[in-house]
Image (tube, rainbow, N blue to C red; front, side):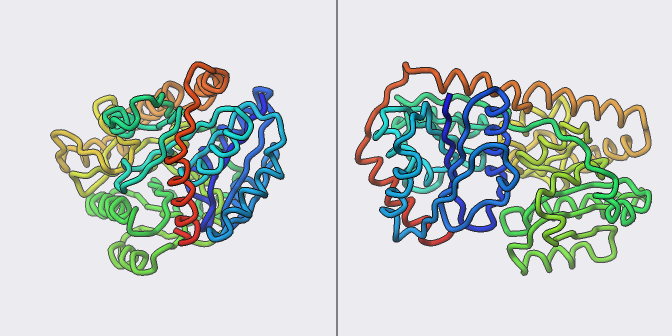
Length: 387
């Protein structure tokens, strides 16, 4: 099949959904499909720099949206495309126009995150979601009664540990301590998960446990960054914010013993058998992902929005200390991580489902002209604002 994926890039172009798309596109290519990724927006994304499939960048500043549409039609509108697949609402505004023109289908993926809170979200024929939280939301809404809404959380490839020299600085910094890793943009959205990670390390430090926390991420909010520096003062917490660390930061997962993760980052760590923790809504430290907490945390895409029933901080700390002290218990937890990766996260299982959706002609191809116009106007406004 000839598959065209679309995504919008405004800022640094390294958000999790770019990596979701890159992984799915690469797996589709490996299965013998002809893949093109189209990045629309203010800048190209470095995520696709070394891609083994065609990548096109179409500039768009919002005000020139009709030029952008013309450019898209010139580049791919004349091709014999089997499916258009967008990875955010703004790129779906373009993919649905290309779809109408060519008579093919267009699919939208909502790449995790909280449920929509604004007055508008596009109405596609097929809306792929990554979490039960999003699935329940759209299933309950009357506007989406004719939309097919499959849940396909698998979107991560099996990672390989990087070469030792890639991690030399981190290994030297660790100094033999057990490493807890949090890969995260440093901003107000992820502030709480950073606070919980720092609190956990301070608690373990108070128990004389040999631990260190590495925080790797782009600083998007200087105020939050300085708050985290203050909160971690005197504790074995280290920040790595340079581009040499934050570009494809997942390559440093191998240094970690424990990973505090959300969404895609946690799934990548599972592929390497790391002990997994997730931030939560009703506590001040992250919790271990186990057979008891998996369903609750998975429902919200390991986002920190979940409340864990019967959470008790002392009990959670004891569970983590046991893993630090007991090698056999630690290894059992590693095996659990490998298991949930294979069962729930591995993109190899998902690609068969994607192929079925791409080939399925039974779903209606409704024009929805009013929704298409609203979608395009919102896309122009969103890209124009640059946020």
